[in-house]
Length: 306
Image (tube, rainbow, N blue to C red):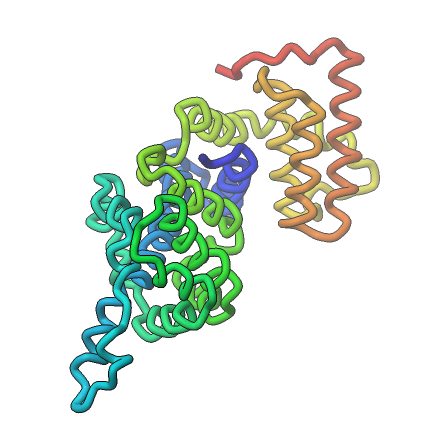
């Protein structure tokens, strides 16, 4: 499932897009924009799964192509198609959630046929694959491991593949780790993951509430932030830094299930990754000071802002 860290990134991206616009954001528009970011994550996950299935199923295409040669060799006529009949592969292909994803998002329209072919041929040269096709029987563990091998050893380390994915999915840099882990989770238990629903109701509510709180309580959060800036001109602070601090103060005040220390650490990490080199230290200082002020003033009574 999508983590709270991933949710914070999506909310940050949404706020940044809204902040760059001249007209003020409308709550309904903000919600739609946030949903779009999550939809991109779902589509990326669906495509990674789709690509694995296409590499595995290419065995049948390879066998047909070699058998149809004018003078096929003995090897051409004995190409193994075992992986195309992989039990887990067909469990995925017949999964209602995956079939709906193919219908809605049409991952096949993004396919690079030559890239699929190259990764398949690379697969056939590996010892892992040779061991797999050498066994006439089908073992549940081995069926899963060969599909995981395609992902972890042939797709993700392949610069041609990651370059292709980056072009197709602008969110790859943000979602790569999450999407890769979710893909492995899907391979381990296809029935345990609905591609259309990657968040529990609690996390969905957290995402919606964090976005809405950051928008509706902007002035309140600035009342806490601006006095702590000392010699800094608020208008010269990086937009991302200001958004991260606003989100952090929102969590201090209105999200009772999140410990302040967790909030501070999360936004330090996000600042280091998404803003400037100095942002992590800067945001740590500001949020820590605000937290101390709230505690000393007995204002750390977290309640839902509504």
